[in-house]
Amino acid sequence: MELEEKLHEIKKPIMVLGTSSGAGKSLTVTAICRILKNSGEEPIPFKGQNMSNNAWVDCEGGEMAYSQALQAFACGINPCTEMNPILLKPQGNSISEVIHLGQSIGITSAKNYYKDWFIPGWEVIKKSLSSIYKKNPNCRLIIEGAGSPVEMNLIHRDLTNLRVAKYLNANCILVSDIERGGVFAQIIGTLELLKPEERKLIKGIIINRFRGDLSLFEEGKKWIENKTKVPVIGIIPWLNDSFPPEDSLDLIEKKSRFSNPMIKVGIINLPSISNFSDFDPLENEESLSIEWIRESQNLNKYDFIIIPGSKQTIKDQIFLENSGLSQDIRDYSNSNGNIVGICGGLQMLGTTLEDPYSKEGAKIYSEQTTKGIGLLPLKTTFFEKKLTRQINSESLWPCQSKISGFEIHNGQTELDNTQNSLNISPIFKDLNLGWYKENKEGGTIAGTYIHGIFENDIWRDQYINLIRKRKKLPALEKRTSSYKIKRESIIENLANEFNKNLNLSSLLN
Image 1 (cartoon, rainbow, N blue to C red):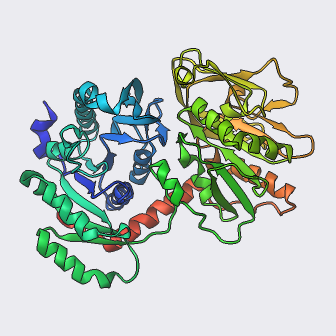
Image 2 (tube, rainbow, N blue to C red):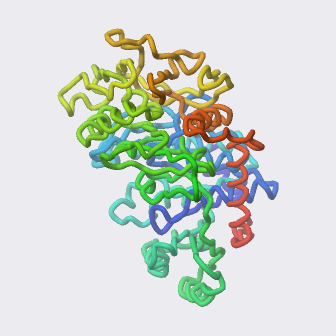
């Protein structure tokens, strides 16, 4: 039996739409998922199509957006790709990699996406929905929209907003961001552009990121309700807890939340940065401050720097070279600086990047071989197939400990036999997951393929203690709770704040 014929049997889905990108849809879904879990329901997150380079790998090795993985954690369940059946990973120049149910199936331009991928995309969305309900007949889907549902030039090819809402006859919430200004125009404009049958689906409005006394918006709330005939079901205050941005552009707005940090960390803001959620555990370390590095500068003010993952490693390495940052990083290393490269960052720290199949931009740059920063004697060759898998291993440096995380990368890295590789050592028992070397006068250069490496509490603590020892600071005290427990606490606090200021009762019937 098709899902359409069983819609009367399922619990009414809740869909969170936004007046714009960045209005707060993702965190609203996260909060609702935890609120419903705490009330005894069985919530499951869903986003039909997401565009993001901030990815997660599920237990079967499939790629999905990290935001849906975080929402799954809020539900107390394991993430799986059916929660995000279509993932588009931007590669620049309006080109994206297309991933269906966790597997890479092609490359598309924005211009050709509707023509080539709309029909198969809708089929994979329906397939995922049917599968979720078949496995979890008592669940309630909490669905996240994308951007605005009323981009009039795109609405005919919108896979993940109103098409899903109408297909499931979902109870929809419209979220607006008062911090951006023009909240009345955001709401009225969005509702006016909806067709009558679409507007009927909007059952509530949320005003997000309100600063100050919530009672001061009472007149505004009444005006919106009188004008739209839709209840304002929540006015959510500005929240300070640190969550990963879904878009790399939002990194510009991220600032350290802690005063008087002892350790200063610099992260290179690559043009094609990916998996920036790797740094959430560092954002939540009170002894650290993080700055994003966007242009050439003297890096000696940082206690360690990180070169993050990249969706286009060769493109980003050429950016580093042309901007002067490659030389800055080499100078920093020569000044006994401490460097960590993750995934693409590991590859860039090596000597050579080989691209025989043009997977990383060799056609664009007319070169199959690109020089790396040259601080680790490593050579990377990009092959046609990507590696995605979860990792469970054991570290050898800076301490022995159990390690978990995941890999998402094209490219195989090995020791460069043309270089002196006597002073380089593996970081993990699985020898291909990372390497490090110590400078003669102090400082270390390390690179790993493991995303989520800093979520490993013992490993993270020991690396930070390595830096603290060199600064003659006392070691961190033994931890009373892990980062994952802290993440749970952040999700719980988020849900509590929403629950105090949000009335979901009318949407649950």
